Length: 266
Image 1 (spheres, rainbow, N blue to C red):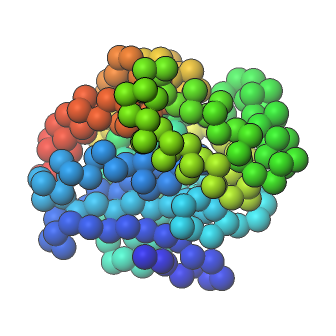
Image 2 (tube, rainbow, N blue to C red):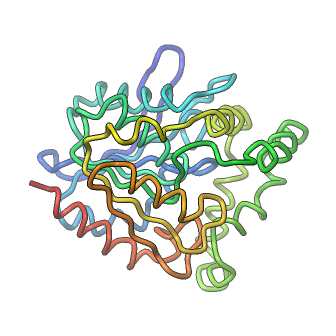
């Protein structure tokens, strides 16, 4: 399903009972709403209405040329909620999705019942340019994300995941390499230019932060900092997981998620 936003389209998937409270998901860089497939069954069984949004240039959403900002990406979420007539949501985002969640809580906090931020960071990491520069140049040179596919999967999952769920591994890798270069580069620019540390203490949204214990890309320390800076924030680690604990250990992740949402359902 598509939302018209000027001369571009934002893809969304909205399922569940019309009267149910809404959980809004945003995904990681070079992924799409399909990364949340493992979370759908328990949410729908419990009567939640689930909205999954694809970022600019990811999944079914049109790319936008140039650099993006976290504020602009958060505004895309607000625009989508306006289009769908949804006033407030329970928000769940991972990686850049969690960064967008922080921007949304800062700029649109009145539209949130709760926020669950996963495997993310409160600001551009030290040495970010050194880590991201080669990836950005690789994508520009190749005109594709194909060269990043295997390395990204190694950062996202432990070695135990691929032999255990090879079909899902291939599916997620395919999503990575089919992301548009414009979408990847625009979001990478946003990741390299943000700092929410000064503003997080002003956030009034109930917030849970979750991270894989072995996440090297957005390490636990940064996630714990988010939980410490937001008043009342909580942190939970997931053992034997890297960047995608919701896919690698869905039973553990879903238990945490359902307990959190259940406590905030009202």
